[in-house]
Image 1: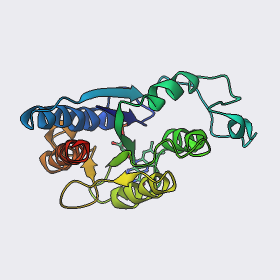
Image 2 (image 1 turned 60 degrees about the horizontal axis):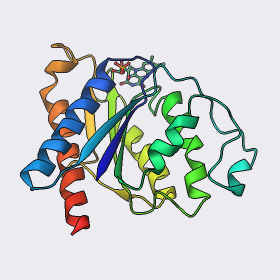
Image 3 (image 1 turned 90 degrees about the vertical axis):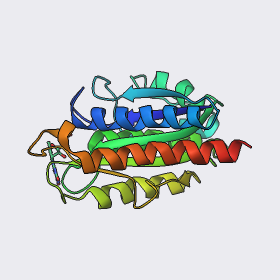
Image 4 (image 1 turned 30 degrees about the horizontal axis):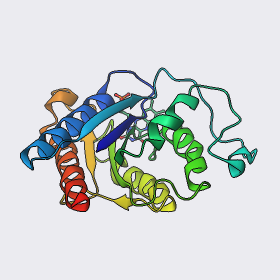
Amino acid sequence: MKIIGVSASARKNKSTHFLLEQCLNESRRTAETLGKSIDVELINLAPLKFNGCIACGKCKKGVLCSQDDDFQPLISQLADPEVVGIIVATPVYMGCMSAQAKAFIDRTVLFRRNGFMFKNTLGGVIAVGGSRNGGQELTIQAVHAAMMIHDMVIVGDGDHFGGAAWGSHPDGYEGDEIGISTAKNLGRRMSEVACMMQV
Ligand SMILES: Cc1cc2nc3c(=O)[nH]c(=O)nc-3n(C[C@H](O)[C@H](O)[C@H](O)COP(=O)(O)O)c2cc1C
């Protein structure tokens, strides 16, 4: 089993990346405590260069994309049958997901058009805002909507919608204990559900 985390921040190793790492580490730890093994992989979109979908229709002919860019290697990584869950971590930009997150999500339409390849894959979301209440929950729900379009199975943090963190916390994002706990709880829930579904 494998869980893939996608960091959709414009910045490489900042708050979104940090929260996603916390989440994925907790996923791995939880699986171990349940006597199972879950590999985790982090895809960092920050250095990648790719645009949104151009609606050319090539993916209607197979698991293909006409755009020859940095999204191409992600296709096989995401199509791995070992993948049981995908966690999208995004900063809140203007009350919603980042352009990087939206471009990534739109490009995944090829999996839907080829037999709903993400069907039953678990989906979780982390949103990190510069304000404590800057649109994290709206952002999480916007990504959830795309996950439902894929017929994925939405997983929350066991209490609310998912990871909701404050990147500009007075103690730094590493000091946002509440936000970190929501990200960890999401990771824990992803593994609990994955292990339960595997039985
Ligand atoms: C273009 C832009 C728009 C933003 N809009 C919001 C917003 O609507 N709400 C909010 O809480 N923070 C907003 N922020 C702040 C980021 O969400 C915040 O700094 C976050 O921690 C950045 O993630 P990173 O550290 O991974 O880059 C915005 C930042 C940028 C650059």
